[in-house]
Image (cartoon, rainbow, N blue to C red; front, side, top):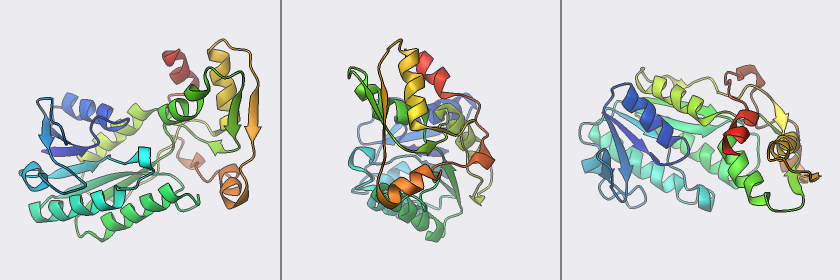
Length: 248
């Protein structure tokens, strides 16, 4: 029995579909159960976690408070790990982000803290770091600017990956023994946000300028230096252009 948190999110949803297609038993932890494989539980309060974990051997923790930049992530992870240890869970899998130790952003520091909690929990674990999903770049940066007469793109190297490929890797790890920190996973090409924006505008059939924005300080330097990338692990095959065409 595999419990997935964040099972309706960007990576959680395709992960649940992937696991189900493999014939595995899957539960999706949610505060408001609606589907057959949903089970009630609240990561922030801890309510319902003990019941939700009955019979669970593996947890894949995909939940993250991205709308509030991870404000509750540490608390939620701590509650889940405590409940998992009490329930005798055999394997705890956490999806993290490539380069979080290099990029001085509060959300990334939180992700590092959660990684440390997982490592120190006493539960056999696997941590997979992935580069940014196509969906994240497209929906958070480019689509909100769709109606503007121009597009602003912060200066950053990036290596976007198709989220279903990350879900497939998580599903593979879920049926394997715990491996600690495994090799990072990245998309097929290292590019820049500016070039991605140009591709997006072209596919949309628009003719408007893409303006580069230089991010100042240590953050900007780390972004321009490729802190978010792992070119040696360019294992993904789906491209951003393919994602953008499918969304058009």
